[in-house]
Length: 404
Ligand SMILES: Cc1ncc(COP(=O)(O)O)c(C=O)c1O
Image (cartoon, rainbow, N blue to C red):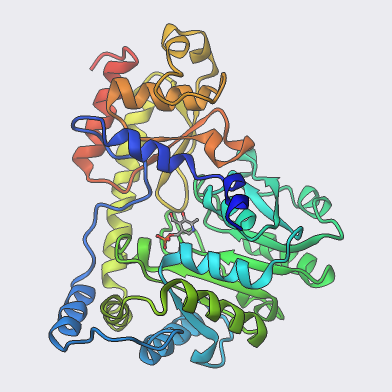
């Protein structure tokens, strides 16, 4: 494994994060972190866990009460027919959940169909399992959804699994019930597994609906749904997530990965997870309402920039994934970029990313980092404070010569 890891990429988001630390007074619109604080229900439960000295080893799978609450949430909110809390594995965030289930399911050389654009660690996880990511485009013209005929043509005798990420990071694209029914039919006919990354299940706007593919008839048996507390409960640094695995063989393997990587997820954080689920959905509703305001504020600002960035506000997640005016390629700024983030040739999105960071103090992620389909785009996270978003817009106005 050691040398093999040299060929597994690290996401550009990590590179950008490092560069952002050298920027004075930055606007941190780069990483997918919310500016909200974790709800009081979480903090109170963690405080109590500390006072009660809950600082010892736990079950590898996670606290029984937490797994019970998660199983109930999956049944009631997601419509997934989880029969027993035994099917749940608590993980150190979604990242760890994805790692555990990919190691548990994939054999070297297996192909996994991955959306393009997609959150970069997905490809890294597939490769870390020595499997092969096969990109399938999401199209902006289809509201960042698949052409499902093309999707089906990507399947070969080596395809083992489909990786679905709805709502999608970076595009905010949401697969419809019809899309998911077709994908489910393909998975059943071709005897494929589905990884269903539902990290942004709660970040929905304009009446958008999130459907878990695991809730469709006959799908939970072959689907591993993956969730995180990071976005829903503003717990990015606390590291809590979970997966549901019906198949006992795959589950046992994933449990071994958890055992060998963490022994168990931090006890105090797991109590926080119980507090979150016992505390109800009011904090989530508050977050989403505020995100909706921030989305409007940010897109209004982008529209005032004279067309340098264009695109429709997303119906989900919390990213503005916007197209860069191709004419920017003939600007002197484009020609000057490529020094602070070298090695990306004439990529317009990498050069724009560098320009925004080094001259405007604005964190962002180049679209090309999310796959070939993302080139020509830039991702901004709008889950930041309103003042930070307005500051970034003002900085962009100055940068692109728009009268303030
Ligand atoms: C699509 C997607 N899946 C999973 C995750 C995992 O998040 P975490 O490891 O913080 O739980 C992220 C985080 O940004 C994400 O964007």
